[in-house]
Structure formats: structure tokens, C-alpha cells
Image (cartoon, rainbow, N blue to C red):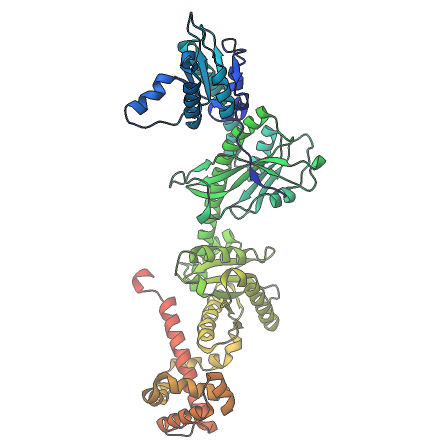
Length: 598
């Protein structure tokens, strides 16, 4: 793509195709104005939508309301106003500055003014100057311009209605975006590309006459799809309705274009409720394209973008409803909230869940999924969809529950517990690799032991959540299973007992009273370093003598030497019991809703 610049909008047929304006050149073909051009041929492509007398343009300035813009307006004035050289030059300069489309100098009956000086000024300003005969007074010329503009507008509206009806039939049939792209390509007789708001190709269609093009080359030659926050496309309304933006003309260079010529494309944004949903791209088959074809393609592009947006909105609504239903089913599964086996069976059939299958539950957590800022909902939705699509050939159910993503996956190696656990571990590693980029480096994936049916799913989810809580507290590996923390599993019953909690509290309380969390973290680091004083000091960025001093304080608080194996085991056991008790208590509060909501 050597150059990607916006092409100036063509006047005449192009502009007429949008809103009924006609060009100055087209007006000169009318008998009333034929052969009247004397200067300013460079501006013949200027669009005209109305005609006003010079007196009307001056009235605003005299009333103090300012000089309005005269774009697309032809100015009808007596030729006598342009007879004097200085007056003609100043007047034409003023009207050109205000954007007048053309100057219609009328020769009143019985007079003949010399327009030589005015012609020179009109050529310099690039404004067409017409020398009108006496029958071309203001009434006749304004009627002519109005009739031509009205006829052109009626033609454009009729053509637009036909296009909308043809594409509306495709929308009503619910055939999808590819069918809509084919319908647009058949109407325009040129290739059509539809992209979503991230630049991914949704559909590609070519006309039926066998014209071939490379959609990948075209997509690569286009400028990036604007981000939502930076989109230059207009926000039309905060309503869930689809609209087509104004088509933009671009010249792009494709490697395989015939003759090495650039390709003219029409890029039309697809906007739904003020948000960009993507864009519709139409590639012209000739360069430069025919003016009449380009005008028709602009109409097709506007209607096509609107109806494509409606189809995209419908599909997103259906997809969102399916995801909500799947999320409700997953939440009921992991919490075991079914009224009876019949409800479970009916909902399981709808979602393709095998009630006799073996499943492992994976839990995904990251700081980016916490309800902070504006992006967490989008990231949560993206991560859920990525996980759902990871295993298209198997049964995978995903949902966002709280600040985590829950993934229920059916295992192929049913009946062999060892192979099932290995399969669950491999999938957990794949899941983290796939979600690492969107969610960030602090991503953790934990999983429970595989189980059978709905009851097995609920148990596996509990274990996965328990492993997640323990992993955060203990600094375990980013991917770990319940079995990887089996030491905590062995202490589960002890941590749930009154004796276990009392032992942990009585062991740790003196240390915390003596030095807060400082002494506790130092003893933990010493135990993790297997009693290596230098290694423990390095892990805490402390001097060796400071480490010795802190260990002596801890020994006095515990009334036992923390360098002995017995003291280290007691402290390690108390710390693990308290951690497990805290995690299980928090998890129990979360998984056991209040009685009135059961």
C-alpha cells in the first residue's frame, strides 16, 4: 500500500448520487444555459443545489447577521454589477471566498455589459462565470435548477428504495452476514469485504461474472480500523439501532492489481447505537471508476452498511443470550443448584452436557478480571469466549463467575484417574498460554480433581477454587491443581476442627504480638530456605546479622529455638492450618448463599 489518502469527493454524478445535487457542467447542457460559459472552466464539477439572487446574499450582511456560506449555491446577478473592473474583481473574490458554486451574469433586455475583466477574475478564482441571455432571468434559472435538483433527488430516493428492499429481503430471511455480502456484491458488481471492529474478516463476496481479487491483500492495504475511543466516525444516537456512516473514498495499491494501477475503494463504517461495529469495503473494478457507477455504489454502501449492522446486532444479541444461558447453567452446575434430576437432564441436553461423563473444572483468575476500571468486563468476555473456543471438538462450558473464569471440560480418558489428571493438567497449561496475552502475567489457572457427572463437577469446582485461594497465599506455581497442594488437602480436616484452629492461633499469637507480621515472614523465609541463614537473608534483602537478631527475637517470643526441627515443624504446621482455615472459610461464605436466596 504505497499510499492511502482520502480522495476528494467527486461532484456531478457522485454528489448527485448522495443528495440530489447536480454539477455546473450538467446545467450547461440545458438549452437555457447552453453555450453561456465565458470563464472559470476549472470549477465545472462544483455541485449546485439551489440558485439565489445577489441581493439575497447581501441582505444578511446588511442586517448584521453575518455572511452565510454559499456552498452549492449558484448566484444570479445583473451583468451590470460586473462591468467595472475593480468592482467585478472584489465581488467575485468575495463570492468565491464564501464558496459560491457559480456566477450567473444576466444581461437585462436592452443592455450589454462587457465581462472581460470579470472573466479574468473568475479564472483566477476558479469560479464558473456564465453570460446569460435576456430570457434567462432569475425566475427561469431558479426554476430550472430546482426542477433538476428535485428530479435528481427523486431518482436517488427511488434507487435507494430499490436497494434497501433487495437487501432488506436478505436481512428478513436471517441468512447471515456472508449472504448480505453476496447480495451487495451482486448489486454493485464489485468485490465486497466486511470486517468487524477489530479488523477481522466476517465475509468476502465477489460478483457473479468471475472477477477475482485477493481479500487478504485488500485488508492489508486498508488503514487500521479506528479504535472505539479514537473513532472519527460520527456518533449518531445512543440507541440500539444500526446506521451506515458516510462512505470514504480511498486509493490503495494492491500487489496483484492489473497494470499496477491503484484500486479505488469505498470504506463505509458500520455503526450501531453510536458504537462502531466494523466496516463495509467495496473495491471498484476500474480506475478511475465511472462516475455513475461510483454514485450508485455510494447508495449501495450506505444502505448495505445499515442493514449489515442490523444483522450484526441480531447475531450479537443471539450470541449474548446463548452465553447468558450457558453461564446460568455453569453456575448451577458448580453450585449443584437443580430442583431435581429432570431439570438437570433437560438443561444438560440443551447445552450438550453428558450427565454420565467425566469432567475437570478449571478456574482462571487475574488482577485484570477484578472490577476496577472500564476494561474488566470486556476482558472477562474476551477470556470467556477464548476458553470456550479452545476445544471445538469436545464438550467445554465456560462462564464468568465473580472475578474468575470457570471452564468445565469433559475428559476423553474416562475411567483412568491418573490419565484424567494428566489430561486436566495439560489443558490447564494450554489455557494459561492462550489467555496470558489478554489477561496479563499475574494470570493463575487452578483445577480440581476430575469427577463424574454434575456431582463431580461441583466437587471439582470446589477443589479448584480452594487451590486458587491457597495458591495466592502460598505463592504456588501459576498453574497448579488440587493434588499439587496435597499437603493442604491432608490438613483439611484438621483445619476444620476446633483443636486445629486453636493450635494455630496459640502458636502464632506470641510471635505476632512480639513483632507483627515482620517476625512471622522472617521465620517462614528461614524455613523455606531449609535453615540456610544466608539464603533466607538474601530472599528478604536483609543483612545476615539482622537476620540473626530477628530469629533470636522470634525464638524468645515462641519460647523455643526456631533453629530446631521441632520448632520449625510446629510453626510450619500452624501457618498451614491457619491459611487453609482462612481460605475454606472465605470459600464457604461465597459458595453458601443466604437462606432467603436458596
